[in-house]
Length: 128
Image (cartoon, rainbow, N blue to C red):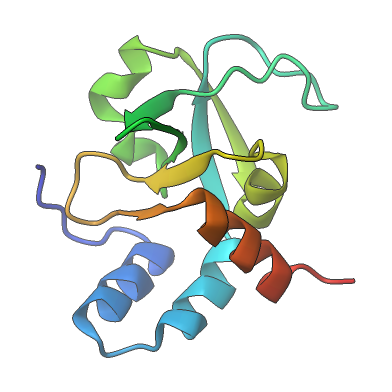
């Protein structure tokens, strides 16, 4: 697992939340409003079609890979060569039912959101 120092404001907030110095809810409020990077195997059109995200199988559950910064993509760009930037809340809205999300896979500055967690975050942070 790669140990990373925070390089962006959202990563600094994530590290603080992981260290217990910032409430998780405060981090999540900022995180769902932040732009993240996703890898996709094909070009994505403005309406979102063509999105073929990099997936990880975590104990039988598929997770969409999300990165807090393009610098975090690393070797995974070999598996899915195209990058898209979306708001994290929009990513969560597009995650199919039964899928989770893994943030910065393979690093200490990351975490997983279970499929039920995706639903809870959407319930807690979606406007309207």
